[in-house]
Image 1 (cartoon, rainbow, N blue to C red):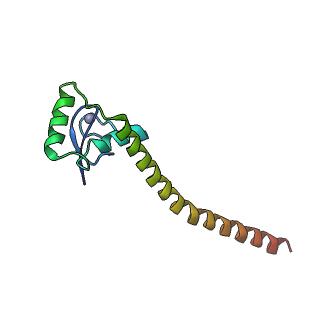
Image 2 (cartoon, protein in one colour):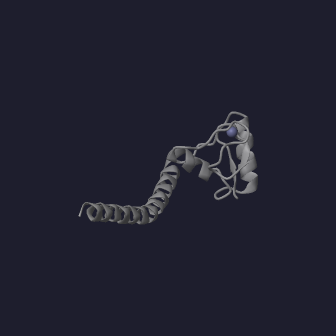
Image 3 (cartoon, protein in one colour):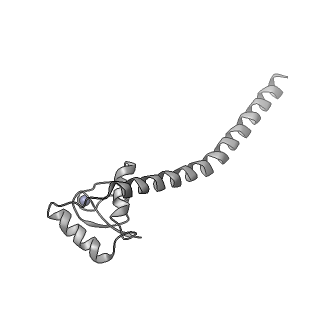
Length: 111
Ligand SMILES: [Zn+2]
């Protein structure tokens, strides 16, 4: 698991999108998740994570370049779309088969 900094309180936590162990902040919208990813060891070295944590605790949250946040948001959205389409197809297919079976059963019962 990767190390990340809670952008609300500055606590170090394991994983960018998990609830903070100290303030329980959970990055939920895509913009918040993008920023927490940028504040994880995927992008920052351990020592920068420590100094980011200290800066947030001191009341100086890091400013992320808007272009970097936007790029990360696009990355998250494209990953989620891939996830959805690969999940959605078998589900739609299974529903169609069930509907056909139900229609067939109803037809056989009526006839
Ligand atoms: Zn926190």
